[in-house]
Image (cartoon, rainbow, N blue to C red; front, side, top):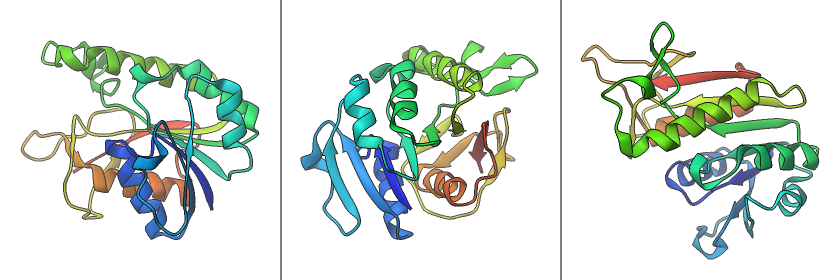
Amino acid sequence: MKIALIGATGFIGSRLLAELISRGHQVIAIVRNPEKVPPGAGITALKGDVYDKDGLAALLAGHDAVISAVHFTASDPATLLAAVKQSGVKRYLVVGGAGSLEVAPGVKLFDTKEFPAIYLDEARKGGAFLDLLKGEGGLDWTFLSPSALIEPGERTGTFRLGQDQLLVDDNGQSRISAEDYAIALVDELEKPAHSRQRFTIGY
């Protein structure tokens, strides 16, 4: 497929870029600094501004799907959605956050006293983006939330998927590697199983 990846040099975006290329997809990497995109077959780096609706829409047009891997505090959900819709691309996958996952009925992770204050703004804006997507009727969207802890690690291919509840392992830990997260998102791209839904991943 021909994929537009917004934020291809970020922590998650760089893993997604590697996963997409390893599976033979053609990727347009849309970033602020194209020179930071690693050269390679199947990769085209383009400079884009996530706050420029018309310019972004022009870059996205003609792709099979758009993947957004940008921080919620460094973008505007309404502008991103408007750009994707204007581009005519129907499939939109979003790298989500864990904060809006439930840890108990009606209780979200970012509402707990243990949630780190430094991540609260990003987490709440991620939750607001998910709410915005849920009211969007014109796109085939998917929002993938990681576990509470996502960090560099191994590409194991062994993990669990869930819906709106935070996944924890037998030791009470909620974690996933960025490499395995990329597998799950690209799996969803290739074989959609969570159309117009949020899902989550964890060990």
